[in-house]
Length: 441
Ligand code: GAP
Image (cartoon, rainbow, N blue to C red; front, side, top):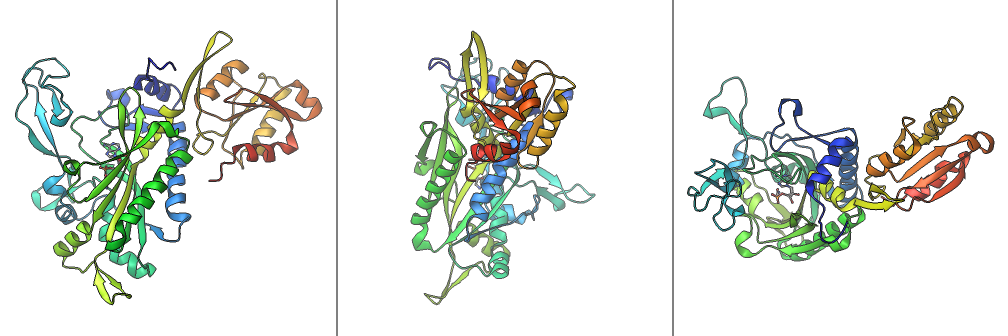
């Protein structure tokens, strides 16, 4: 890509649709703004991201445990957390074209849709939580909300986890799952959705230690994004100014990614939430949410550091960062330089042609590989087109079975990035690929 033309979201949206990563939700009915469906390759990549997060945040640490809580919680949770009162965005309407915007996204008082000047209504606070009713009667007594963040379940389960798991400070509770926000202006593909997935962890520590843990988690989380393959030059840390801090935070770092066409944007937030949530839930529920500090011989309310990242936003970042175009022998080649950790398919097995002599060995090779790596067998169309297809979905290695293979029991392995080819004996194939695909995760 030339410096002058940043990669457009349309290019990514089109690749995602064409190759089965992401489709507009309910597309045959015209779609639904802010909702997206992950296709066969999208779900693989998304699961890889979630598995890698869980491994690094829960399974590789002895100070963090996981939970999986209900999406609909007692509505009192959202009153105590401050979401009913303050989880709002300022909304304005253009009197000319009737379109609706977030006031803080408008520049120069000009409508971005119709160009009218000074045509906006006064800003009104719009609560972003989706409402529903629990049970057969629809009245205000059984109103409930779809959770707008996964975090609150960790706070209300604090005592359950401390007691059942005999936890000592510092420790964390992690969760990943769906969240819902009735965003006024969803957009930029899956960057801002109305239904999305979050991966969040609440790390409880002694109040005096919160700064040190804030720095620790910032460092850990930055390293995780790099490990998944995001290029360092496209990541930066931005500290929130006092006036943009959420109602619960006394300090927040954002990890931002440089989405060329959209500019630097939040990928992950690492917030210091103080003791706001535990205190608020203790006051509202009447249940003590404290920790007995044996050293100090007193009950304390822990402080909390929260790394919170979206699955969808991580997915978009990885695709955007991996997209490459180059010219090969006068033709444009598009490939995704995804880390094998996140690539939806690790190996493609391609017989040189759809030939009755080649197919049995090619099928045998793909059965050999499948238990070890997610493998795709493809014998449709020319070999060149099949390589291009695998390049475009980021498959790190293609294994080609040709007529020589029938004689020497060896296959050709082509790597996605350099397009170099290696000849490897079939019995050595699993070990060869394991070494190439290994990224220690
Ligand atoms: N518990 C704190 C919290 O929810 P947030 O900054 O509102 O903080 C955390 O959300 C992360 O969730 C964001 O950094 C982003 O990656 C993701 N996220 C938030 N809103 C989103 C949306 N509407 N669509 C997609 N991802 C979103």
